[in-house]
Amino acid sequence: MAYSGMHLLTILASFSFHLAIFKWPAAPLLRRLSPVFKTLPPGKQVVLRDCVMSLVHALIPSTVGLYVFLYPGDVQPDTVWYDSPLVRHATCVGLGYTLADTLLQAVCPSLYNRTMTLHHVIALCGGYAVSVDPVVPYFINYWLMMELSGPFLHLRSILLGLGQGKSTLYQVNGVLLLVVFFACRVVTIPVWWVQFYQHVTSDDLAGFRVATIVSLFVLHPAINVLNLYWFGKISWLVYRYLST
Image 1 (cartoon, rainbow, N blue to C red):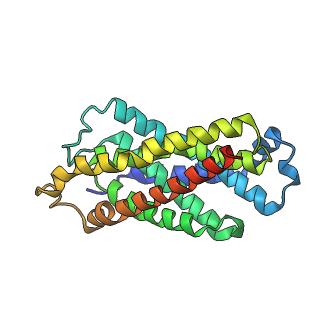
Image 2: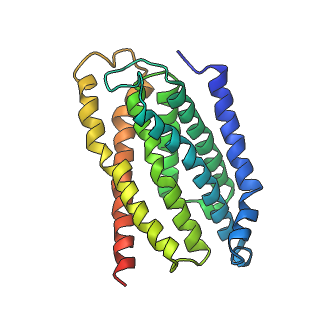
């Protein structure tokens, strides 16, 4: 199997939608939130506009992922080949967003970050590999649920950039970020592998593309490592902030 026209349309629509968010409503929204925004250097304004775009994106796959997790239907741990429209299209939305953000990083020097560039490369390769065919949707849905921490992460960056690093909202959001990040990106690591092990010890993966195998056994562990690295950084920042 491969992408249908609807999957390609979802990727294109997501790419265009997120660039439109960055181009038009992001800056007016930030100016409305705080007069500080218009006094910032152009580079920092671009970074905050990108945060708005990323926050909007995080709400989409995370909502879908949580819904599928709570109401899985046929999306089960022992299901290998199953075309879940919600999981597959949400992954395509993520591909469109990642393409848009990668393009922005290429043309906006202020957005360049080596760790995020690595993340985007993994997300593009892995997202394509696990969405081009309808495989192991239960486990792919865990990737969608990782985005549950996204709104808190990007709101933190926005508040900090607007000079609200001492506000109550910033403090509460920081604690929520730590808790949600731990729940959806760290706790899920052993859970994912314990449940996925049944397929490793069988012939279930025999018909998978090489790209899908690489995604599951190389790129997924790489994302796990990045999540542990980021959780360590977030924990340290929260500890340092609360101890001052």
